[in-house]
Image (cartoon, rainbow, N blue to C red):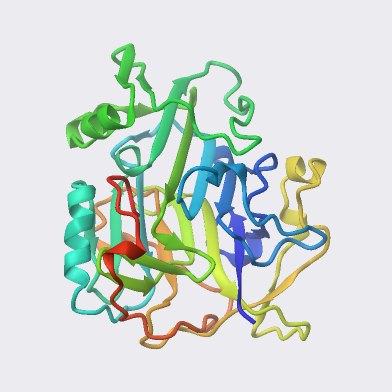
Length: 355
């Protein structure tokens, strides 16, 4: 039986990934690399998937009370290096193989472009992609100055599933807030000039949250206006020129098998678990083997690499670093045909990011 598994790592290499327990609000995944230090929490409504060894499934979170969101990826952290601007950091997704979209797809894309006018996309190429500036497209964002040790983080803001309370962005260059709510943030960062003038520094603490009502990660499908398709497996952060990967979050349907075959299995390397995670007892206690699915072949659940951070125009596809699996043909699509047209009452349409 196929079940959802969520892993988090610092690169595309699956051996660097650790199985994450969705909805564990008080224990976000800690990551510390050359370019980013932070915490990541993933939430999935009605999670029925694969937990880490010796962990019990948490089917939901107080985060989902009173809303119809299907998932949340919440991040808190600092970007290291003092070398980027808000125009360099993007959110989006791209796929490793062509997807056979139904003819109605153009309409769904037009509606997405209306929701997110900064969106750039090519959904019909051999490796489809869609990108939008992070500070414009994220559902919630807070950027504040913190002059403490740049290798230190303030307390995690959502130990009980709390939503980010304010949507404020402080710009030290002009010495004032450039956004005080989601509307003013989107308006301000819709301007490329404003994004390029907003410098990212190590003394900034970023809190941001991606969520929506459209993606069902239990089935790896997305409901767009007028259609339903199988979608992504990877969410990650990196520079626009693909030279830096900040982190990668992987969503995939997997079949756990006790038989270990070197061509079908990878080992989650316990030695690579950050010390903070070990101290919090939030790490994988024993090596875990997961079966990869074979390469997609003309279906609607392809290999995918969904990036939220990047640095050269995404239209220059040759500059994007493709995902390189450990073995050849590691994925297999198990999605049925997704050309299914759905009625409008099957999704809740709201003016927010749907990347």
